[in-house]
Image 1: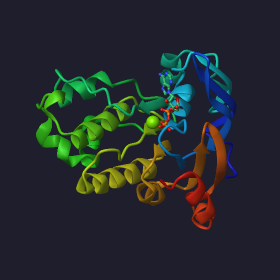
Image 2: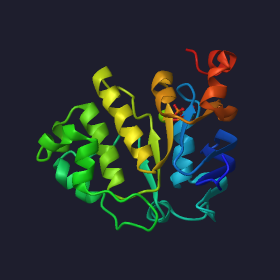
Image 3: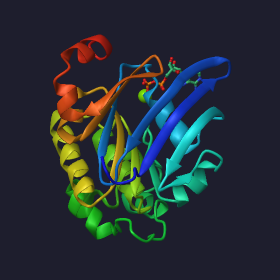
Length: 238
Ligand SMILES: Nc1ncnc2c1ncn2[C@@H]1O[C@H](COP(=O)(O)OP(=O)(O)O)[C@@H](O)[C@H]1O
Ligand SMILES: [Mg+2]
């Protein structure tokens, strides 16, 4: 990676109460890059993403986004600066329609970041078109996941934190999700996605960061990771 990173995280530590969860986590995401944060259940992936967004009270470390330190800013200010977040549990408004859920995500476009309209989003997520008037609570898990990503894109983020996008999705929907992520990349959105599905991660990621018990155990390009079955066996195999 030669350009200055879009996101640079260093010495990130986080705790829940007295339970220490992250230990000096370091990772970065280059402009337009997709980085996969891999690790078993409980490794600290969601905590890392939540810390970057500013949702963990007991957290310290360096988080630099577009060259500006974020660590002292509240989550809403990080979002205003172009950080998008799709949580593991999606948080779709179940009593709002697809169209209304998308409207909730709308933010003014900012300079130098991809600009999304509802029409453009329906090109990326064609299955949402016929669901426009469907209530969020009446959609399948896969449809909700698509909507959660589309809603985040309505905020015109330059980097999206995606927490386990493939989790619980039927195989056919996983393929659509891969396609959607590749379109986001082509549009220039940078991505940091946590995953337990290795195949999914390897189809979309440029680089890989492996965490276990809250520590980074490997970080490298997708090709470097492919050449390290020992890492996969030690930290990712069930
Ligand atoms: N709100 C919380 N309070 C206390 N412990 C938590 C909380 N959320 C997660 N943990 C613990 O933190 C560790 C890391 O969790 P998490 O970041 O969710 O891992 P992952 O996303 O990799 O599965 C786990 O041991 C989990 O039990
Ligand atoms: Mg998680």
